[in-house]
Length: 277
Length: 324
Image (cartoon, rainbow over the protein chains, first blue to last red):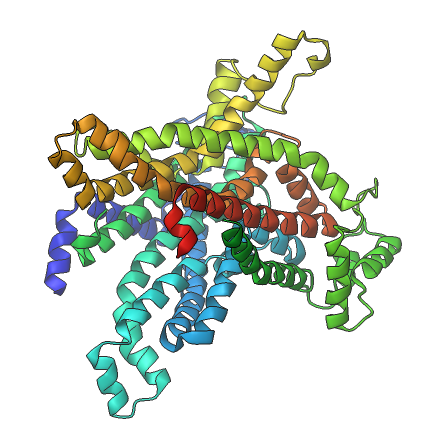
């Protein structure tokens, strides 16, 4: 079963490419202090808004800071936001989905109504409203993105639980007197991991996109901390003179999100080739 | 049909109550009372504003009473007064900006339908051809591209370098003095980029959905029957298959309403369009609480209405829905 998975995964070139992008991103953000050519916050007023050159591969921004170095440090933000926000969403989604799917009846109706209600809010509106109250900071951003992104995972986990709870191994566990909590977390949940892993990978991509949009609007990661989104804000402010400020950080977001999406879809197709769309 | 609509309206009631509870919870999310937060964090909010906020949310009453009193105001669409110097009622500020936002979203939804459905159908019918491969790449990139970044690039290309399209607002400064045809062309020119960009994400999503839907339908027995009857492939695909594959699209369009509305914050801010999204952004930046909460509520209501319209149209199009 496991070797089947890896065999199918490595045969899927797009999935492997996605995996390489994701690994490269990890390496870059861990090695940021060593590979960034300049200090990301070093202001150099002599070299303001310089186009890409041998000294500054991706040019400099309005304060003369090296764009490449800021992007390398910015990858840490993307990584952190992606994982923390998705982690929060997964925990909420797994617990609510498990309760709804396992207990059914009124528990199920309450949880699913809650999901429906949350889906009525344009998620960007909800995030902005909460940020308006709680002050923008990286932690608040991550928490709020997580708190508004668990609905899809809840539905997935619930669907898995509804089919899994009728399986023989669950009846067997109940017959030997296992508690509900034990059955949910030790017996059923591990079997629902596959779809959660796929949802998590795609969720990381979504969280990175949301964070970059928030930072771009000035409501996310606050300068001077570099993030891909807030470098793009400088790009918009200097739109008629400095195209490099707009081009490169956006490409980084695009490639990263593409990488996670390809990886997620690749994992799904390799887990169950029948699901392939 | 009336029975279906009545039933559908009844199921909206718990959702509506839930929406008000979440909005109310967001107001009270702040540690301490919302008025403390206002004065602590925002020096522009005077003691007088604090008093107004206290009156608006009845903050000196017990929490359930606050909720009931707030609901009573909400029922008559009294969303309070803005904190900005104009002190205007929130509902007026929203309604005067709503038409712009709804127009742009409606236009981009039309664009999505016109472009995505043929793409999806063609790539399903001509599966695994070059066309299918190219659209697959377009769809994948479409899912991953940050649309605000694409907006920047198109602004640089068409606005700055080529100078073909304006990059801000919805009309030129000399709009008043233009003859009618030039005036309408002026508005169209201003709307091209915003509409195109807000449609972009939906284009990728719907064309992919349409493709898999069409592939699903083509496998059905009644398509085999139609072919067996000797009907031409054209009629089989574009009459028998397409009709059935189109039905679920109605639901998808309904579900895309919150995404479109949420996206309006980004596009209206980038292109300086005086709509509800821009108002929301400005209110968040200036901590204009009553407006923020008002738009949050109205946004959820618009989604609810969008879903209702989608479900009712589905029931009109497909009688099976009405009886089940």
